[in-house]
Length: 464
Image (cartoon, one colour):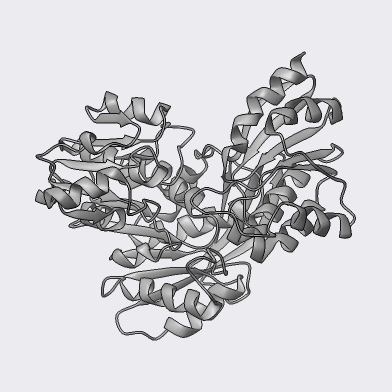
């Protein structure tokens, strides 16, 4: 049976309650019986889902939204110090709790699996949540995206397992103490918080150092950064290390990945035996995520054969190569990819799933700092498409940086031989794409910002 509610979280107020990470914690607390309240910048389906669980959700930020009897205020690293609700919390001496601390407290007393890495966290966490739920193990889970199946990003389960996405962007994953940790890859990203790969490695070493004694690190044997992390932490007292991947010496070795349209068949060698199962989403990187999930579940004692079969029931996460619809013989798919490695992986997956079709991309860069550091690589990734439309940078939490625009990406893409068009007015994109597309084409909206909103509009124009 899962534990109850920590006293500090009995009456929490979430600033930015509609965010992917914040809303998941709020949902679990509401399901456990806490009196949850919060605010968000805009109305959303997430806000409605929280209200359905009994939460009070205000739209807009104002000091008056914070109740006098709030037990704490929960914030993420994106909340600015001058937020009126945060200022009011200081006036009332209401404790302020970072969302990572809140999530860590929800894991107390449970066997936790924390999924980390520069890419693939949401997918791998989701695969585990779906598979463990399908096996009747009743896991709690908190994910950075909505599952296609259950249609939510978090749930309180009655079992003793808790599966959580562990975010390295602000070092908050260092708060958790998992029984099993997965590290999918280690790359330089989040340039506003990390100045070098050494800082990244140090952060991941701290995270893996939080694994409980006797616990397990499941780590890629293929990706260079993960291999280096393994070298740094292997031999640590009380830590079991399980490697997975296509490398010859991997503990859970991938023998073969066979693409089958929008699915893959994966064969692994585990404890000297071959095991074959289906991954119901396209792309080699998603197949490898499933193998990581398999290794983690086995480390917790879940029978490999049962878990492999259950992983085949996973059908995707919203915004992770999610089919938005088809019109005029053109399929429109949405991708959250915003780092060059993710972009290339999703583009290659779509190439493999759509032999003979043209691939058209609508890309919205995410963050000025990321574009400044990785704009060239983003442009080179776009060369994998037949043609691309590039929007202006989505700023999210950042202020503009002089001289940093989408032109950095476009110039790099053109230098790599790509067909790229700049469109500064987002409203003009649906008509432009509909004019480019032909029956049989695939259109991929790509980025971590509001480019996702364009999919239905593109479909409308294609229909007309």
